[in-house]
Image 1 (cartoon, rainbow, N blue to C red):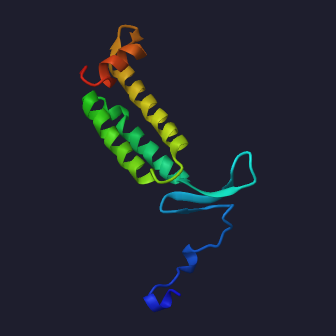
Image 2 (spheres, rainbow, N blue to C red; image 1 turned 120 degrees about the horizontal axis):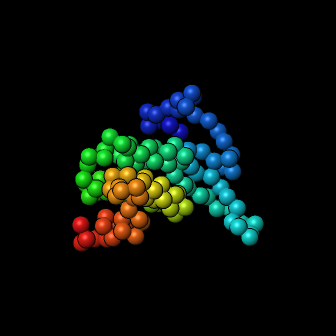
Length: 140
């Protein structure tokens, strides 16, 4: 089937698996799952673990100690661009739980960085003040 078009399969890269086991393709994990509470099945596409780990590492690199000299607004904008592009690519799959997990990880990294950067005396700034200062549009 591929020969007339001039294509061939790379045997070392090709494997045959059952759809229940699932496989990774273009950073998606594709597998068949049973619908909860019924005996019906559906094909589910979610971001692969490798893709999730890669975006978490990008956020970690942007919020690392060496970036504390960056303005907070610039940092948040760069992280937003990264996450928006990643989310646009994976929006066609079943990605809500993954998006929530990545969002929580990014939020935690940003808040930890801001708390460390904006210490006051022995205690750091509280979460409500950080939200007002850095996360509400028009309050910068």
